[in-house]
Length: 184
Figure 1: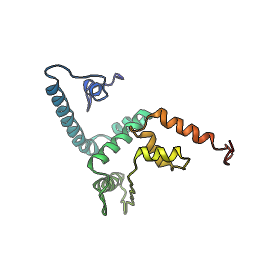
Figure 2 (figure 1 turned 45 degrees about the vertical axis):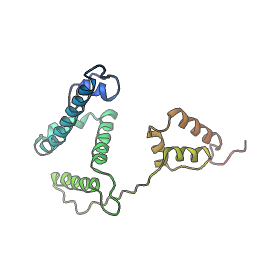
Figure 3 (figure 1 turned 90 degrees about the vertical axis):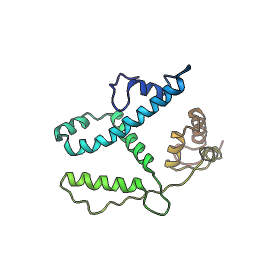
Figure 4 (figure 1 turned 135 degrees about the vertical axis):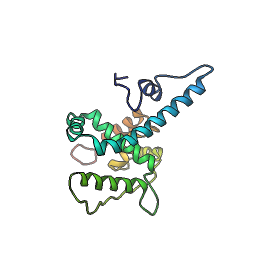
């Protein structure tokens, strides 16, 4: 991997989760079970540790964690939030989801830490179900997709990157760079 120290995940955990390591042989089933159990426990413990960090880590140390923020750290923050929000439930039809409630509470707590009274957190999450294959077919048919729909396709593991690239190239070839439709 990238030489990172053990943290929430050990080097072996990272290798196993990314498919670089496989357990084979007569004890493989037990080894996979044990690895999953250990990961779950360390994730739970790490999440609980955020309460301690939030309440007790010195301000200067907290700043140092983020002072050299790079793309990898930013991606980790984004994906950490995505992991947490996805895990607690991003949708709850007809009412506020658990994720929305926790995110709003977190914003209030973070504001209070800076001496700010957060009067209102206006958060609206709109979701719809899309099948990647249906979006891909719409793109192939020349339909315009929204930026979120394109991002959904790009991040979807159900669509091969090469297939999506070919569709996008074809769609771009049909469009004049100045905004008009070309006649082929």
